[in-house]
Image 1 (cartoon, helix red, strand yellow):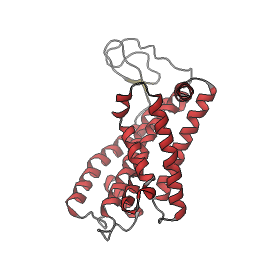
Image 2 (cartoon, rainbow, N blue to C red):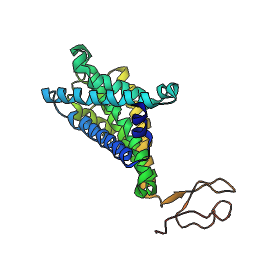
Image 3 (cartoon, rainbow, N blue to C red):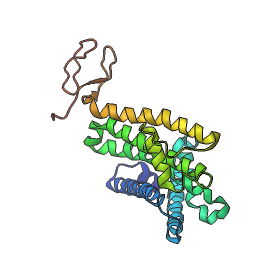
Image 4 (cartoon, rainbow, N blue to C red):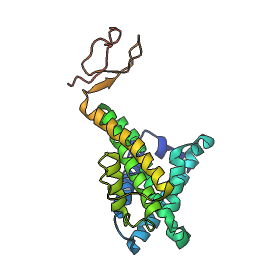
Length: 253
């Protein structure tokens, strides 16, 4: 049983690839569910879906732990603890109404977007070619929705300007894009600190995305002489030291 699980999670067979892409599809569907339902009022079908998704996450978590050879390293990963929190948040209806606040932490499931990129990068040239742009966009999206969830969790009910998730998202977007209309402000010391965090980190991520979108396309190739990593796609010599690069490509311009 354990050997079969290890083959599914780490094997190279077609069956293993199909299994991992099924998990990838589940992660994508879960992230979409998290984002969409954040805008909706609580309903019985959402609670049922929460529990069902939580159960699948638990099974996947247990299976990944079982096949992990380095158990200690498993617990040192950020995604491991994000999954623990996500499991609690999805299973909150079973844990009692007093733990319902954990539901807002479902946005930590967005950290699985990085695992998606790792899998897709291995299989698709498009992802490898535009890796910097995709990674910058994912960084911004993950930060955006995690901070929106945090703002909604800490301000809804105590701040009349944050009545729903859409209000929190609106504030986050206007802040990190430096628009700052001023019609919504966060209350209390914690609210001010969250605003500072959104402004500093969010603006940085936003500018990073703009930078990789508008600068000329570069390829990653370490220069054997000076160590410069980024070069023009058609570069023959390193711009820094002039050494011949021999950048491998697939014959496409």
